[in-house]
Image (cartoon, rainbow, N blue to C red; front, side, top):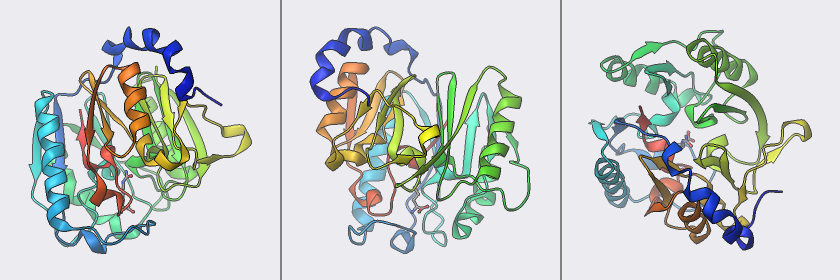
Length: 279
Ligand code: CIR
């Protein structure tokens, strides 16, 4: 088991000294909220999302990225694709190259071709490769510092994860890549992200096979598991406004924390990282 909140004071000084190693991004691609978002896929039972509130939350997200120095391209909404604002799942960007995914949910596969030309405008783009049965969602690929964790779960299968690992390795031979089978949550990054490289925060709802355990530095209280999806960006950490615990952790680890309301996206299994592709 990793750290808990009562141990926080012991970790604070070590955390603050490493702030500079957080991810730095100049560009982001986001897509405006689909007007059919309430018809998207979800495992939650939190009710239907309110489109206007979701648009406000999205606008605030975009403004926050801009306030941190990110040049944000906002694509027109794709109203025929209810989950298309969750652009993270369509590609994995590393070292100036976008690797297109092959999402595990067939309903979401058309999103990839829809975003391809916009990625090609800015980045080198490559295919995942492998058979049509190789599936990977961007929400299962966590790259933090020199480590990449690829979750094998509800949306990403072993063949998809291996293809993604192969592509990442060919871009960056120094990257330490691990495939991590998991259960209990939709995407790996729904439950594990890094406030900064090497410092993972986790939702205790995630379950691992014995041999594939990930040991986060911080496990959140069960009631605040949603807070485990954080977005470290240009010296700050975006966190969910619903988790006081993750706020305390991110303040101690990084210093600058920006809480955002993601309530409408949460109803559809979405969280902070899902709404952007960053490079
Ligand atoms: C889905 O089920 O695919 C969407 N409703 C939610 C996707 C959220 N994306 C992510 O966690 N990376």
